[in-house]
Image (cartoon, rainbow, N blue to C red; front, top):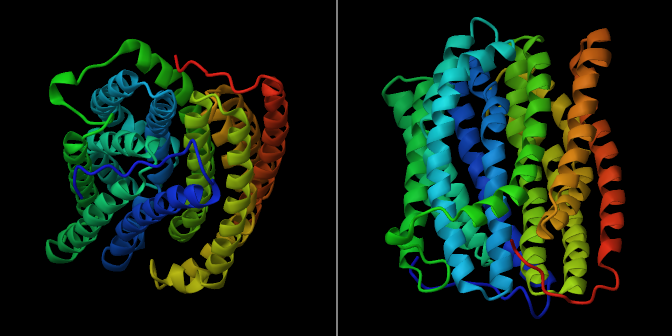
Length: 456
């Protein structure tokens, strides 16, 4: 890794190869990130017991709820920088990059403090069993200490993605992730730590990855170079990032909010179900990262081409992203179903845990292709700078249906099968609504030509 630039020309030439070149390293980044997260669960499951494993897994929706809004703003930074790049506005890119770095660190510290204050309340809200609660709270408190560097890594990655470079964040993640796994084993097996050990390893590895990306940004010789003396927030640019990114973040929070509700229901079914659901989640999420990578590719490519006024090319980006995402996700889902049981066994050897975990995989993995439509349609609209509509649709279609389901259908029949049915149902309704919204949205651009669009 060096100061050499690896920017992709998104405004000219073929699209299929470039979208693949952008999305596949991004998918690999997400998958590796999840593998390293799964290592947390696997290490405590194998060496500290299934209660510790359940304690780590029960924190996933809590962490998602706390961080998704800011991760969405990182996506807004990606869109803003992409559109400035499409307009060849070097000054705008520079201000946006430095605003992103400062905002990431400040918001990370703010949420860290807030999260530490409300951590017990959130876990009580989830109905975490008393025998697991102390470990769950310990894991969450240690994890929250790493929010400033976690946010910094996400915003730095967004800066690189805005230029079409998804390889550099991937390389940094591979290095820091390997360190994370080594530290997991050292803290838990050698030092005898439990959930606090894997949480500490996560914080350290995120510190390393964010520091590497920051050093690389400082060495760049193009528009996205970071200079310490320029680190300040441009209010107008931050407002644009928030306007575009906050609805996307709220859309992610909607998923986390509904998952909090579902996790609370899962917690009522006992430690075996909690452990099985945690293990299955760490497998099924691989498909989501593939899906999400093409959604982010769509956002970035549309953002640059919209900034350059190339509306027809924006439409082609959405179509190609949809087809590629559907094809690759289908293959991934088939593989996950075929190898589901052996993969679940990596987390815990209890046959009951594996059996229950397969129930979740059958309901969720078999329906993941519906998520393709949701992510690409939402990603396209965000690229144009319109994030509110997909956020509202997702809130109603995902959060509304899932919460209603838990308090009606699940309450009447409290079984794991009943609970898992809500995932494909909520996805199908939301995907249909997003398709309609996107088609109506495109009508606004018919006959507009290739007029250059303002970022702010």
